[in-house]
Length: 123
Image 1 (cartoon, rainbow, N blue to C red):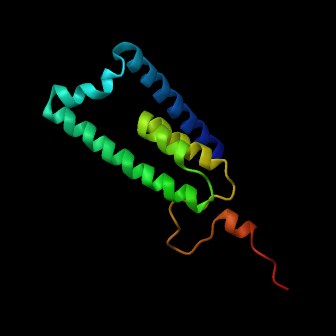
Image 2: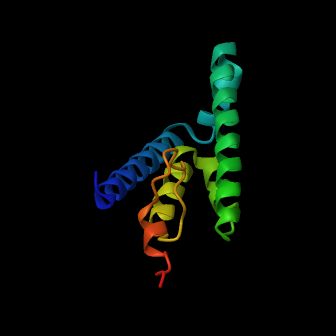
Image 3: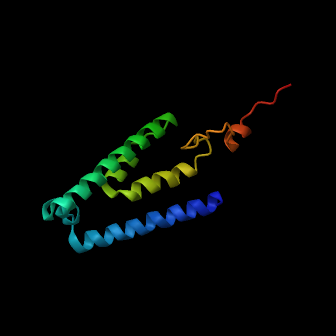
């Protein structure tokens, strides 16, 4: 899948989640977030699990941004308040950074296109 197609898919995901979040806010107000804690134990478990996952994603965003010399706090705030919008939005914005190292290093020793492009010619 080409980089352009991946970016387009990520943009669609961000837009869908933004619209869905807006619909939920308009329908239920901010109560849509706190209601699962008070309605049932299983709802509270699901929301707590999601908060833990968002915290872990925020930690990953923090270290990835700092490694690349970027300020991570705006993305962390968006991730913790809007969930998937922040995470996918971060990945989308990151995809436009040509110097960003791969999120998952290649185990077989193959170099990425950026690594090959930055090679110094040997004489």
